[in-house]
Image (tube, rainbow over all chains, first blue to last red):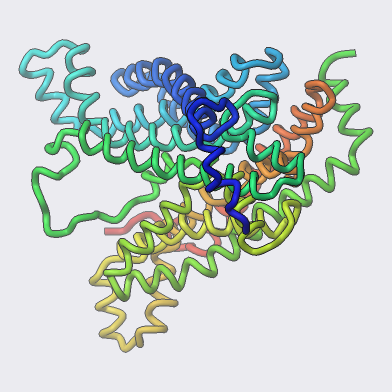
Length: 240
Length: 222
């Protein structure tokens, strides 16, 4: 396995639009834009469904259907509907990111203990205050788990942008295959894999900063650090 | 002629390609789950036996799970020296993902079996090996199956990604639609069949689980 392409300094120049720094930024740009739109759609809807309990059927089944849908088919159909360009790729990535986010937000809100919500109502909080100041912070661990899962899938699938003529890290994979340039393919795959792992670790760190120590149990260090994960926790598992 | 007729005509005229895509999809998606189960059971046993292995095995698994599938297909072909188009890359990659997922579920499922049940089995004279296979594992089955179902459905949808590098069962219908200038009938057929395959595989696993765990159908007597 030749790593010449990967470690060639010429491929790491900031000014070159075909070099890794520019391609990584493009890739992260597609990912961030799609995730931002998905968050704006999914989190309010998930909060609303979780808070009111109405539409739970939709929230649960959207998550299950999202897992079964082949991402490539969704992207191709979105492209066929709107033509080539950045917009259809972002639309397709948003379609992929919304189900895990929405389902995780809903599941997180539903998992907030009933007596906590009742207590909040008892001290005179309005429904909006309960949703934003009680349910949202308590739902954060599950919600952010869904966000990591969505982010991972979007980063993986954003390679498709290059397949339909845009940039991002997919360029090295598809150009390398087309030109029988194996070192280029390996370099692209390594950079993509490392980027995904690094982003996931950063999101994990962000999760520790954002979630209140009182919510995820860090405040009360128990002897048994982990309780067995049950099947319901798998609902957030998605893969691209 | 309506759009559905167009889709139907495409399926009829290309039924050889659709069939072979479906067949390829089935074994590319399901073989890795079987191999992964065989690998995950001993790993889960190890975690149960030596607790300190848990963090290491799960950390490695979660890193593997984070690697995008397209990147892993291509990296594997470099590491083991197969060509890009070798189906072995896809089988090995999906096996790695499935193992990462199943080890965690299986280890947690085994750990959640009630201690008093295991103590009762020991008191009745079950030796460790027999106890593991005939008491602990069967009681863990419902959660193990939950993991199997997630892995199977995820694999079915992931195989299509391999179509981007020219090999992916039903996924090839997506890239064909793209090459034909966004001709949607093959894309729609591919989507429908992939989702149907995921649903059927999931249903079969549910039925298999019901057969293997007859006691869970009886109401919980307390």
